[in-house]
Image 1 (cartoon, rainbow, N blue to C red):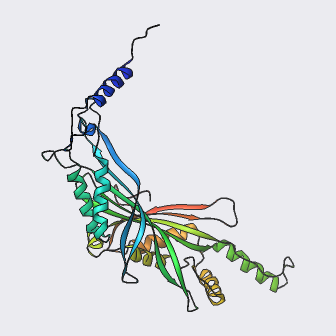
Image 2: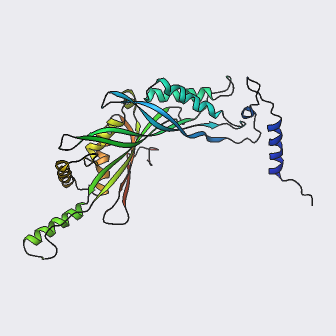
Image 3: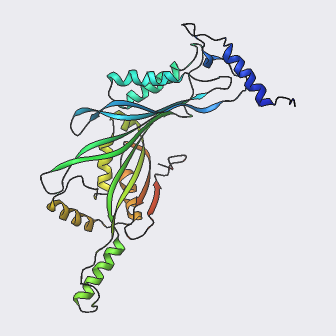
Length: 325
């Protein structure tokens, strides 16, 4: 039985006809369907690519050398109403060209954003794209000295760099670092010491006279927006990690001997902390920096006592500022 085609079928038929009989050609004479106008009147806030894998060179301040790191990039622009699509291969091409001979820094990211805004236009007379965004994920290794022994190991930090054009047409840069540390529960430590004292004074015969406070591996995911001063001075991963270490000195260790293990136990005893303490330490330290315009931290303590975790979120609190890392 014949059925009237619905609106979607009619649109698909029209679309198929446009594909077969494409009126737009590129310089080589091949069909350039992406450049055809769209009559739907629908704009898309963000369209582009992700999971684009590429090696990028970074300058390591601690060693004063360049290292190449395996990175994964996401790049987007906005699609205006009346447009069918964007030339996505240009995004890959721009990043590939720029990373081949340049080391990553904030001027480098700004250059990429400006190229994207200009070169993704279909025609020179069109206005530059209003929005553009690039995000780069990578793991960043730093040499970490052992606490007491003459040793060192590689500490790896999961990182992200973002650069985007905002509504005020300003280009902003963001840096995210995952920082792992050890946290000793102050309440558990206090009760362990109370028990040891009671045992020594013969107030209790329970146990063997030794109480152990619970500690756990913990993490802060810290995202900052660079100030203009931070951009000018190339405030980077090493600098942010330095601030995080000042705030929370019990960073997990990459290589320990017995001397270092004992030193770590002493360090944890000097710095017992709830997730609330860690949050306030970060608040005090990050707010001191003139290189940071805004920041937000997500903190999580992977509890050894409970089967659930302790978690917190804290941020600088600027109006319309960062709220989620």
